[in-house]
Amino acid sequence: MMNVVQDGLGWIEVICGSMFSGKTEELIRRLRRAQIAKQKVAIFKPAIDNRYSEDHIVSHNEQRIPSISVENAWQILEKSGDAQVVGIDEGQFFGMELLDVCNRLADDGKRVIVAGLDQDYRGKPFEPIPQLLAVAESITKTLAICVKCGSPANRTQRITHDRSRVVVGAADVYEARCRKCHEPPEDE
Ligand code: ZN
Image 1 (cartoon, rainbow, N blue to C red):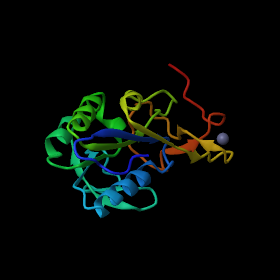
Image 2 (tube, protein in one colour):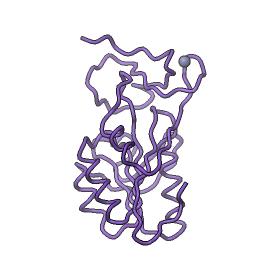
Image 3 (tube, rainbow, N blue to C red):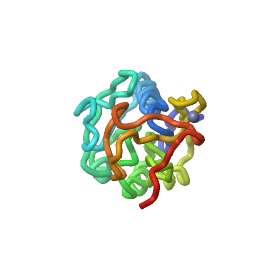
């Protein structure tokens, strides 16, 4: 694992997994360490996700770190300035543009750390995270615990009947399930 930003060496780290797997917690941990090392850090999240806070990234275990809400991936590029480390939460909400943006930031010598869902609620790969995994220098898959059987879980079960791909919510809408216990909706 690379922990030190060398001058001019950029790269991409992806932290992905189901909901309740500790992705945001891990993102915050890495960003805090960079801040402690007095590196310039810029932290972004999509404006769509204001579940807990408008101006902080907040994990399910109540860790928080100040962040900038942006409407789209290009604003991350515009607002990163001279940051050495760029943190991005909920990467799946930014769409495929995030791939280009992360590559450009890393090419520019920045350490880019993206957290996001790798699968949607049906268990299908959730772009742009699969594409980011392909170009990333470092990948961390986080696992939750299945609420049904207690096994390691990497799927997100939607417990409401909404069929749109993006429904922002927490324990009121989703729970972590393992492969065996995950029940995808029947295809229409
Ligand atoms: Zn299970």
